[in-house]
Structures are given as structure tokens and as C-alpha cells.
Length: 90
Image (cartoon, rainbow, N blue to C red; front, side):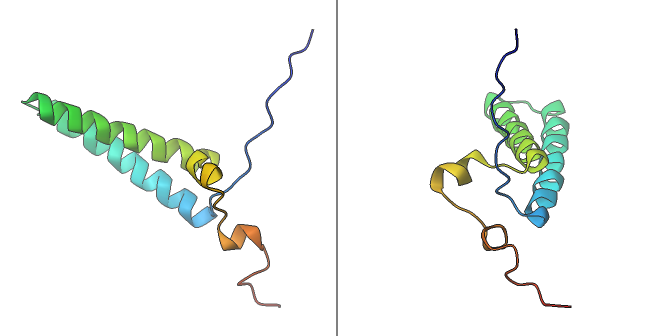
């Protein structure tokens, strides 16, 4: 018996944005973890956990190339909507 698989999400993030999301996501995760080591108050811990979670979100969306919020809003970058836009003929 086979189970149906959900279709792969459509890529809606440009390659440049994907790299940026991964880099900023990793920086957020590392920074949040380092800051957590020295957290002394509940507020500091909460904010640093939120920083780590934001970093994880950026890392995952960058790695997958799909942003669910963009999909919900119907946003498609111009370079993905019109792949030839902005490119010059050779």
C-alpha cells in the first residue's frame, strides 16, 4: 500500500534571498545560543529563544526556497514571475 505524497512546495524565494536567509538564520541561531549562555533574567531568556526560533525559520525557509507567508500573500518576486526579466541577451 502506498501513501500519497504532498506536492513539493513551489519555490517563491530568489537565489540571492535564499542565501541571505540561510546566512542570517545561522547567525541568529549562533548568536541566540551564545547569548542564552549568559542570560540572567526571564525576559532575556525569552528574547534569546525568540532569536533562535527566528533564525531557525530563516534557515528552513532559505534551505527549502519556499516562504509560506509569501504564498499566503500571493507574492512572487519579479525574477521568478518572469524568468527572462532583467536578463540581457547574449
